[in-house]
Image (cartoon, rainbow, N blue to C red; front, side, top):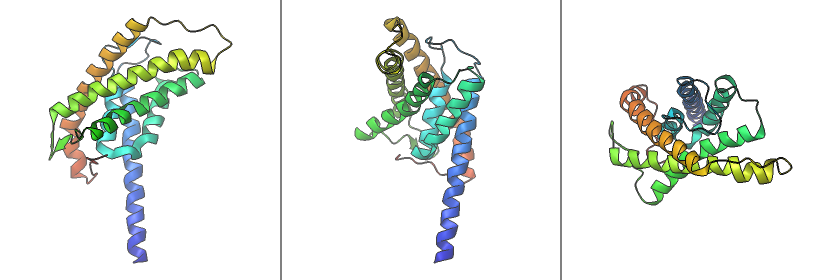
Length: 203
């Protein structure tokens, strides 16, 4: 019994490590495709929100730290961040937005994203839209209220064109989310299953 328990623990640690390493690589590569981006300007296709969402679909909540690390590496080496608290807050917002979306869909019993090796397209599209809404809302909060009132109350407030911010972020998140989720799921899910990396359907 002790040896079986030990073997099971090692397998769990190995699976946890592999899942997080894959997540770090995929999240970082999704940022590398478009290179450096302009602050407070949403990209036409924001692939990283799709990479993060898909990582949670494939591996569950256990890759949260992989998402954070992949996003931080993107910030430092792709987007050339100075590494401020504001940057870290944006990373955290981007990491939890898809989790909120998945949790909401579980609440409404719409969280069965896979049927065998196939995607349930309607659920995935709705998830991408919901993740985009949460991501845009959280990023707007971080860059306005949180930045102005909590992080830097002594500095001049950051003025943002809110309608433009919402439109650009929302469109880029939705398009990038749907594109990345479908591409990664259709191509890589069967490969991951072949190597016995289990998809956490209900997480």
